[in-house]
Image 1 (tube, rainbow, N blue to C red):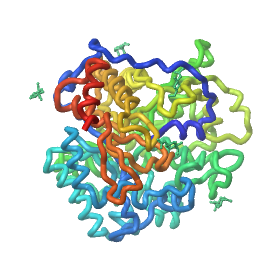
Image 2 (spheres, rainbow, N blue to C red):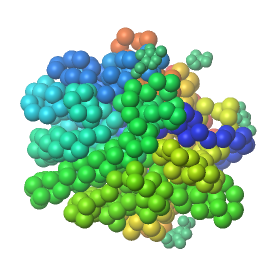
Image 3 (cartoon, protein in one colour):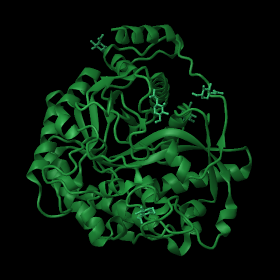
Length: 513
Ligand SMILES: *[C@@H]1O[C@H](CO)[C@@H](O)[C@H](O)[C@H]1NC(C)=O
Ligand SMILES: *[C@@H]1O[C@H](CO)[C@@H](O)[C@H](O)[C@H]1NC(C)=O
Ligand SMILES: *[C@@H]1O[C@H](CO)[C@@H](O)[C@H](O)[C@H]1NC(C)=O
Ligand SMILES: *[C@@H]1O[C@H](CO)[C@@H](O)[C@H](O)[C@H]1NC(C)=O
Ligand SMILES: *[C@@H]1O[C@H](CO)[C@@H](O)[C@H](O)[C@H]1NC(C)=O
């Protein structure tokens, strides 16, 4: 879900106009899903607030997303109805069957399952997730479930500040326990927290995502509700890592032997490329990697934060005790990565001279998004996907990895013939195959997203779906786009399109009647 506009507001980059190279798709680029190893899963994704709707039905209470959107922060767009997935889940599972996916990534709304954030389970919430899971399983579709996708129960935010407080560790673990106990007989893939790095930055430094906290002179919104951009992002990440490790250790100890499942954590990934060949830019690119990615991967894989972060952040940086470090290190079966595009990195060490700094100033880098400014879509940079997987292999011991999100942004109301998405997916899946063939330990790919959903940075302005939903249609009918046919063709007919002519004929067949 992370997209152009996030970067626009958030990373204060410089835009450079370049020619977007047309991705030429010809015979030599043909590949099939059977070129991937047996057991490799292809799926699509969603998250609770973005698709479920029914925001105040059957006992659900607000999450921090409801509060944020209802305050008008998304130009009036909210997930109150979204795709009405709460009522249309059977129809949506049918779309997945038609498309031919192996696996579906979705999240559980904590405040639907446990309306007070802790304590009693909401029977209707429990029923909904059981229904959805059973429906998926009945068609042989693997559920891959995220526990926290930006949507902490508001009640916990109000009570003690949510992720800012260490109390969250206990409540998150108890919530995870309920999920493992109730659903773990059928759910084998658990992700504790989605895009933990972006959640910490958007919610507590820039303030443009819930809970919308930040402090002057930082933040990209005029009036942050409260907070400290200098300290809270680090504190929140610290608590997320502790909460993740606590839930993962619980799973390992109490459930894994019986349920035979896997647990992991998800982070957002850019591929960082030095802006020039200068040594300072090369070092800056490494620093960006350490700050955005190493912030999470180093504790998970090596047991501690990167040295450069400790140095630059200084006394504002929380530290792990040796016991905590041991619990976090290795507390995962897989790492989930969300990749959309590449960022160029320029040295900006001067920001380290500022007396008051936030995360972005602490990095001492400037991120530059090289793109065609007049295009709404992402530039297609699949080499970045190869880059991040190669980096996982060379620097992080090649852990089991899932590409949890990857997809193309288009305008919500643009054509059903979504060529930019087809080209994007083709290019990235092809590069993924290269990485797999070169030894990357990646076992699945989830296109973002199944449906045109409520997008976390754009509301209903942008879309990523294989299926379009006209928001003015009271029935919210799902309509397949060209990308749905392309993906389905790739998954079921054992070939990707092999020529422009072929995809045109595919398009003609599907859209001429
Ligand atoms: C930039 O994008 C616009 C809109 O998609 C397109 O018309 C134009 O040809 C692109 N320019 C270049 C140089 O690729
Ligand atoms: C921010 O400012 C706007 C416009 O003045 C106001 O409507 C809104 O309630 C404010 N939000 C907060 C969190 O103070
Ligand atoms: C789609 O929406 C955008 C932004 O609201 C608008 O500028 C554009 O004209 C619309 N396009 C169509 C085809 O309705
Ligand atoms: C393939 O993997 C090897 C070993 O990790 C690496 O040195 C090489 O650069 C990789 N090739 C590509 C094309 O990524
Ligand atoms: C696709 O290939 C697989 C494995 O080679 C085979 O089992 C399946 O029947 C093929 N499907 C079609 C539609 O050709």
